[in-house]
Image (cartoon, rainbow, N blue to C red; front, side, top):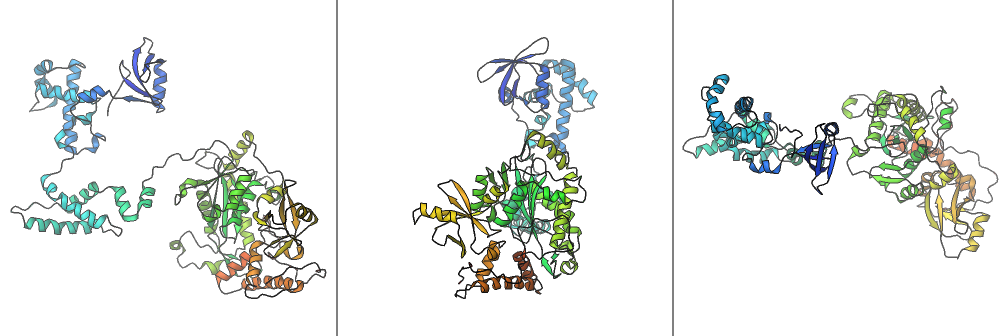
Length: 640
């Protein structure tokens, strides 16, 4: 390895700026000359040594020395050379050390000549080199910056024995034919193919060339093949880049809510219906986590697949305080103080994250939406590790688990062993987050997420929406509609009010208005009043039907009517809604797991937050009264 010291004329790279040591004062201070403008700066020896320790300073080899050197330095340390060359370099270095010990830093041929026999006796060398040879070794070593690898014989670098050189081209052919393939062969296949080619080549030569042994061929294959190229040819570019990527510190954040990550995962557990006891399938988890503190901010657990709806449910849960959940904890000393609008939301490239409505929501909340590169999950590693740890800690240890992979499952029958309901699973996950995960020491941050988040709250005050109602208005889907005497229509539902009628009289008859719909509750919509500069709430004219009805449930009902086009009176429509609930409940007992999962998704009430405590009296999600209300005169929706 090259060695340097602080001396006059030595070039330095300090904080990416090149200097030359111009003067060294008696007290050890160094006057540096900046090469770009010849300006002089003074640095103490202590400052320079600290800069070297913090990797802000490096020595630069003088270009003149490089030019004088006849033997360029070898890349890599001495132990990268073959053993014979290492011994040669050390042998030459032993003479150089003796010469320096006797004559200092300026040996010469005339000085060396009378001492060579003494050096040889001291080293036990029966065939000592000449004085000029030793001087050449010293000069080469000095010009290389005192790098011992410069003493390796030039002609021996990368050398290959003569009989191996003869077979080198044949071995390359075998490697390309067998190993650099999408479906590769083994080293044994390569060796056997090489033997055939080598024997065929020897049959055409007057003097056969010795064929190397199996172990030698294996070593040559490892030496010739580039590991990256091998994975590239066998598994593709993405696998090669992932296998040989350089891991570093990664993304750095300095405060809470500076960067938040979101991701979906299917839970590794089958859940059963709370009423029928039949298995509904595997629920999905959408998780939101703070990158700085590793504090979970919000979750959604249910049968809604990765979609716009599951994303906004999780983000809403992340932004709002968790007071209602904290009140239901059996131990009041545990809290979940996670809330606030994030500055940046990191997500993958799923279709639900490219939804224009989500982009509009993030724009209104002043959230920067960051899409991580495709098939690079480590760009949001915090949430990936979090959901994996959650599945490992809960899903894989409960009855009805599907395990992380099929190899672990064996003959375990997940459907038959399932006993946990969705509400019980929600309860357990929330308890695990609040009482265990938040207070578990995290190696990456050197603290618990709860403590680091609490400290972060002292330095940064999270932003909140004006009100929960304003947040609900933001978490909607926006459409354009025209107003008529019936108000505005959405999915065959009519919305009207006195305020909407006033707006209609002020607008041109053909001008559309912006309408926002909450996909989780179609009981009312918001219409933008451009004259007042605000959204006004407009109720559904059929409140008894639309209140609490989700967009997914409404689309399911409409789908049932696509093949029948006839007007339906109020009682018939409401009866269909009751029949729909019966259908869903009946599907929950279907023999097909897929049908039961679909039924659970359609019947889930998205407005009910997951509860910590379990109650003996449970309401069926999405259930409506089975008796028809009397006052239904104003219900005039047309289905068809």
